[in-house]
Length: 423
Ligand code: DGY
Image (cartoon, rainbow, N blue to C red):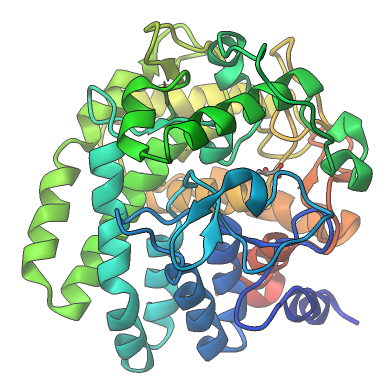
């Protein structure tokens, strides 16, 4: 089977009937950003199925507009923490937090493949997409318009060093005993540590006690960190939602989104740190203490994808990216290998993620950084071709790590990394 056929086969096998799981066993439910990226893969061979993926995600919308990070359409003893631990959700049981809002980004790309076919499908989910973005503005907005996360899982970059200091302050004394399931599926060396897991569970318990009042959790909860990843993805998603608002002819919604986008440069500037990396970078900031996380993560390199206009800082960011890439055999490590906390196989503390490469490279290409964009694409192609459709990749050895037969890696292959996607 050639790699395109293998990728399609992975999407079909991870299809649970209108929605897709990231991979069997390790992640047996519908994860928010995984699902949205998966739509890009389906769109290369089955547009109807791509729209169905986005529609199924929209079915989980909360009354307050939030799209939760996991939809539990059934229980599965192989996963912890499942629906009986979260005790959240409206129409569909769910987690109580969100995830990076890539759905509008995916919806625009799927829509543009065939606008005539897509328009009625887009109309069906547009109001819920817009409600989710408005929720971000209301319940996840930092002091300068940055996007904050109330749980590391909300960022999608669970164990990035961005959260270390803020997590250290999360009390774990009252935590009930629990058994992890993730390390039964994947080598513990590739997963977050048990100290991190304790804090993830303590934050979950806090949110559950707060009745999953998402505004209160952001304002009073033990963890609130302004996240460059979430900030840049949301800015990009707002631009794409604006294009979709125009496509459906919703001028009032378009005006609301445009007004929010006026804050984009201020929000990004608030995250900039001159002293980070070789020439400066965008870094997370703990909103409870004001302290910055001095870590150059791949989230910083989503600034181009956000479409920022700050040319001097973007030039410095390109220099920092060059320095990061000098220390890695493959682009783009999730943590700068010069950082003493770098671990090439441990989840978000070093490994390469194909979806992040997809976003970074699209941003670079749009900003005219064509050589860098091409490098990221070619590296992604080579990694997948040699290591398979793995969850993530070691940036030094190129080995695959984490889960196998991964939906979003297959989707990124079909949409962009495969030679057949070129041109
Ligand atoms: C997990 O189960 O590790 C996920 O990353 C949580 O979203």
